[in-house]
Length: 136
Image (cartoon, rainbow, N blue to C red):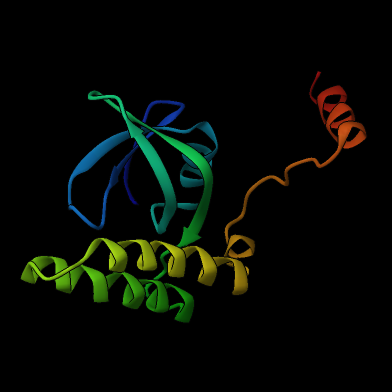
């Protein structure tokens, strides 16, 4: 998904790069990233379609889609190979699953999450407790 516009305090208008369909994504963290850093971001995620809006599920990865970055170009290349086949009507379910795997694998191996300015997530009970105390 690629950010298209900000909608309110906790939603982002996004475009699914596989279908070109636009959705209203409810995701406070992604909304905050877009507000603070602009629209040059996307998210690799599974989502639940609730008709009027979508919600990300499981492991979602915000990614920089700055066209000058080699990482963004490589992400586009991974997706484009599948999208081209889909448009020709020759894409298979296995190729779709492989593309999704390749996107996640690339993001983890290239540490793309580190390219997106966002708050760190506390790990462990003590770190979470400290984070909660700091925000009270």
